Every structure is written in structure tokens, then in C-alpha cells.
Length: 93
Image 1 (cartoon, helix red, strand yellow):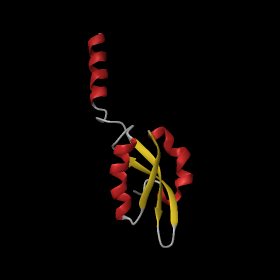
Image 2 (cartoon, rainbow, N blue to C red; image 1 turned 135 degrees about the horizontal axis):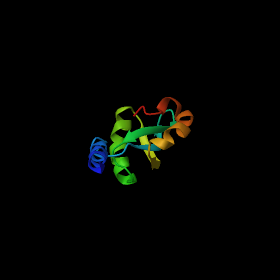
Image 3 (cartoon, helix red, strand yellow; image 1 turned 45 degrees about the vertical axis):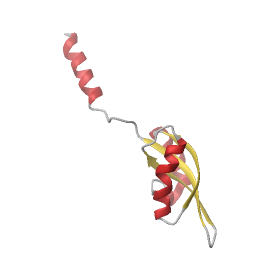
């Protein structure tokens, strides 16, 4: 009786994505005229600010922005509290 339950649990775990969803909130700027923005982006570099910077900087540069810093890296549980602060830059890059 316990084997079918264990098998079902194992299959459910295997069906999960290989990695968790990760997000970074960041600050970026443009020059001439100076413009600043705070944003939130999905990243693959969970828990590593240096790797997150390397991943996010080219995406922002393609939009004419320079990454100033990664504020923090977090999971999906932190999205709702940051959405209003990020405004138009919520998951844009």
C-alpha cells in the first residue's frame, strides 16, 4: 500500500523544474540626460550576485541602461512586495 504512495511522491518531485525561479532587484541608469530606475528581473543565477550581474548587465545594455548594482536576489515569494516599486521595470529585462 505504501509503494504506490511513495512512487507517486517520487514522480511528483521529478516533475518539478530542475531549478527554482530566481529574481533580482537592481538599480540602473542612463546618461544624457541622467535617468535612474529600479527594476526586477528574472535570472538563472540564484544566490550569486556576481553571476546575476554578468547575466543582467547585457540585457540592460541592450535597452540603453547601465547596471549600477544588484540590490538582492530572491524567490517568487518576494515578487508581490516589489512590483509597485519597480513599476514599468517589473520583469521588463
